[in-house]
Length: 157
Image (tube, rainbow, N blue to C red; front, top):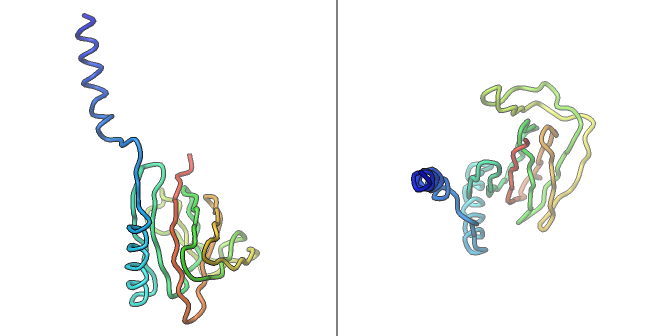
C-alpha cells in the first residue's frame, strides 16, 4: 500500500515539476538585441511591445516607442518599467477621461482620451517606475525622440 502511495505521489508531482524551471536567465546580449529589434520596428510602426517570457503571475516584455501611446489602466497588472533608452514624459495617476474598455471586460484594461489630475514625470534611461494595478498612466514621446523599456508585469492577486 505504501509503495502504491509513493508511486501515485511521484506520478502526480512529476508533471508539475517538469513544467516549472528553477529559474530563468536572459543575457544582456539577448535583451540588447530585443531592444534593437524593437527600436527598428517602432521606427516604422510608432510602437511595439513583445513578450520575453510569461511566468503566469508575472511577465517580462521589451517595448519601444517613437510615438506617444494613449492613456491606459491595467486592472489586474502592476507595471514595473525599467527605461533602457531615450526619454519620455509619463503622466501617472489622476482620472482617465472618457474611459473605454480594451479587450474582454474581465481583463480590467481601459483606454481613454486623456488623463486629468495626474502627476507629470520625465523618465529616462536608468529610471525605474512602479505603476500599481488600477493606476492610470500615459507615456508621451516628443517628436523625433525614441524610447525603449523593459516591463515586468506583475499580476495583482
